[in-house]
Length: 339
Image 1 (cartoon, rainbow, N blue to C red):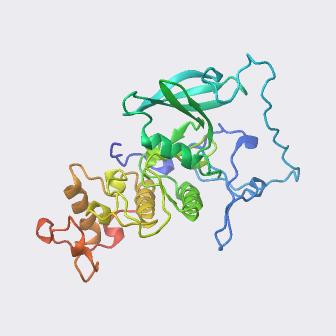
Image 2 (image 1 turned 90 degrees about the vertical axis):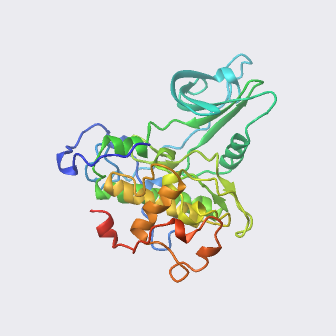
Image 3 (image 1 turned 180 degrees about the vertical axis):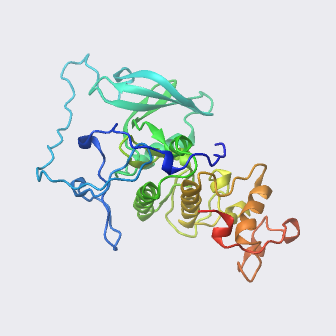
């Protein structure tokens, strides 16, 4: 991800009437007890604006119940397309390619819905990548408005395909489209949904471990969804030892950068803070350009170089060598960032 420059402010962004009122997502605001899960969607308070203009406030005035969702019944004909079959989906265009998978925009021949097809290449000598097994097994048990939905799994001799709901953009692309920082109301809306999704998985003892704007999908109605659970990990015991090779460098907390393998939900929460700053500023909070040393220097420049007084136990971390770091004093956050 490239660093965004601060050009163009909210004042020059004009409202667009591109989203019909009946299509806008309605995002539930919760009470102070923060128990947002399994709430009915007909209690929506806020809606998102595609052009980063201020969020509109809407309430339902019809008083009518939403039509009940009918479950799809597979066609009775044995030749008709069915879920779980490779020929049940049509590839429309390539969206991206990684080291072990290619993602396509696709269409279901069963119900006509758009989907995202994550096609994982299988190597005969290596078998199925463990990250794919982990992602599929975790997502099968996660059902929440702010978690990307896994529709189907297709296994053939050559590939493993994970079929997800299609979401048209991600937070990184959205911020690139609106440089200079997002509207404060949109920052609140996205941050709320991010925290709600994280709270859902944390209550189920799951760490995401790879939070970054590219892994936060944004629908055309402003619904944010956590995606890419390839590095996610179910944690049965809080003190369990994990790998420190997690999280993209810009969003990796200092204790993990210094070699700690004992972490919990705070790992994800550091990423939330970095993303929060980035949404406000329009640029990454700590955009290290070289290596772990450079990344730590950028963090210490703002928060101060740690010592045993400010961070008890820091000297016990494997990669902490005081002589390697410049001594910085902590800054007021308003000095570090201009918003």
